[in-house]
Amino acid sequence: MDRSTWVEIDVSALKHNFSLVSEHAGVPVCAVVKANAYGHGLVIAARAFAREAIMLAVTRIEEARALREAGVDARILILAPVSDPQEAHNLGCEISIGSLYQIAGLPPGARAHLIVDTGMGRLGVKPDEAAAAAQGIAARATLSSIWTHFADAAGPSGKLQLKLFSGITSSLRTVGITVPVHASNSAATLALPDARFDMVRVGTLLYGQDPPGVHAPWTPRDPFAWYARVIAVRTIPSGTPVGYGSEWRAKRPTRVATLPVGYVDGFMLEPTARTESVRESARAAARVAARATGVRESPRAVYFGDKRAPVVGRIGMQLVTVDVDEIPDVMEGTVARIPARRLLVDPVIERVMIGDG
Image (cartoon, one colour):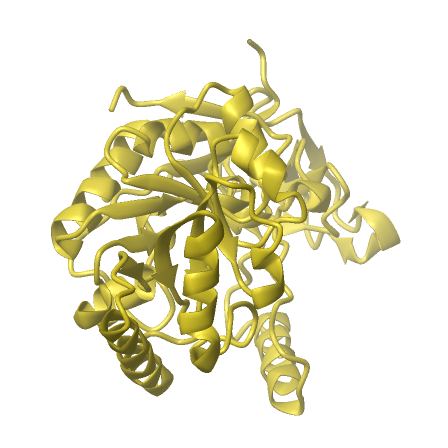
């Protein structure tokens, strides 16, 4: 099949990373495949992990439904509460409960996992509600586990959350509530060995990346690579503008190449999840100034092998032009590697499996 742009997912790298995490953790691993498997392809990643993982985890019922429709029959935990617990149960999925109110909607026979909020502040019952919630779930359905989530596992708050959660689970055991417990995301799996409990829930590490604040003591394999084919090569005279707004003009006769990717595809987009603050705004401004003045090299580039081709002009919606003056072997059809935040790469772009695992 002729493709203008595609993402290659190395399944053998996914499985390799899983084995590293599993060996390090020493407990069963729940493979998190939410958000299109962190950009790697929901079904591709789920199938790669399904045989070895104790279960898969997603955030939304739509993700769980897509896995079932693709024939994935592994255990699936939906990490966020759902509006239709009956549908989740019908799909054979396990349901997270984050409030006393949600217990009443549990279908009989459902497998439910109780979330306890120990400091993340998003989901979960309060610590002093944990016993009542656990007993309420057990009276209607199956209480499969009790879990929490770290806000900053590698920071000071991680140890405080762990201490609080350990105390909660200990007190629950004294009243006869003895079910599996789990707390560790990727960062906690590395930074807080005592938080591994009966299972770890890992995403970032499986995809070959370090979580914030901590580095894996192994060398992962990167399973993700985005590519595009050059669709035009031109030599433009000195003074010729390129791109919207004519903001960039050639300072000399320059050979340029155009590729069929742009900002709508996720090229050079940055996540905007940070808090709005004077400090963060100052940091962002400093980064822009450093690149504009040449103090720091701009990340706006693609790669032909190990040769860097910087972007010229504005990045368009689905097209971008790069300087290939010093890469004479680039021609129409030549394949470039496109750097990107993989979570932001358009899920419509085909994920192609490579590697036999």
